[in-house]
Image (cartoon, rainbow, N blue to C red; front, side, top):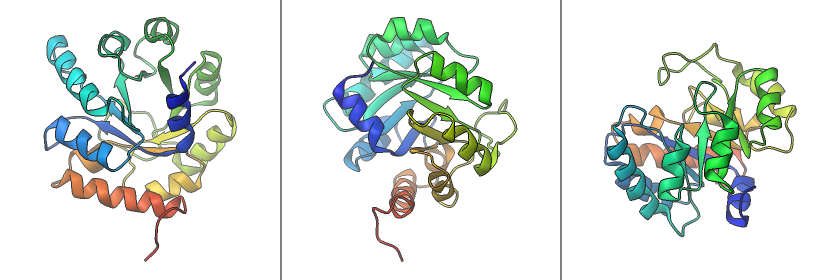
Length: 220
């Protein structure tokens, strides 16, 4: 369903940066991500009023437009469509996937899965990628389910070989390489960057660790 640019970036793998209450302005962090070639940035701000969320989404769309970074909006296909973002991510208790697809049209629709049944549902729903986790314990989502671990990530990923798998939950520069080795195309991080004292330095450290794990960076 996605355009050539979306398919190309989804096929590349790497870091999936979820931006939630960063310690520096959203635009500054996303601009740094774009400058470093981060393939996907997701705006996840569930508590913002609609008008503020729209303004922020528009600002991030301006930062990412025409670049090699996709902008995904969490949970709100209406906002994604309004700002012409690249797509929407729908969690297990968020918007209906079919309704999200109707709203974003040819845009990307990512879905979450924690079990075999949820993974099968995501595949049937025509997901463009699937977020699998939580891999490790996470404080980002208080209602998160039990971690599936690297073995669970490996098992679920093997069931959808045609879809990019985004590992999420408790991932940072030390745990991200294991997720990649377990078969994840992307590693999604939230607090490892957004809550770091220096988010841009944390972003650089994480990108370096991912590059080494993917065999595209220098070791040592």
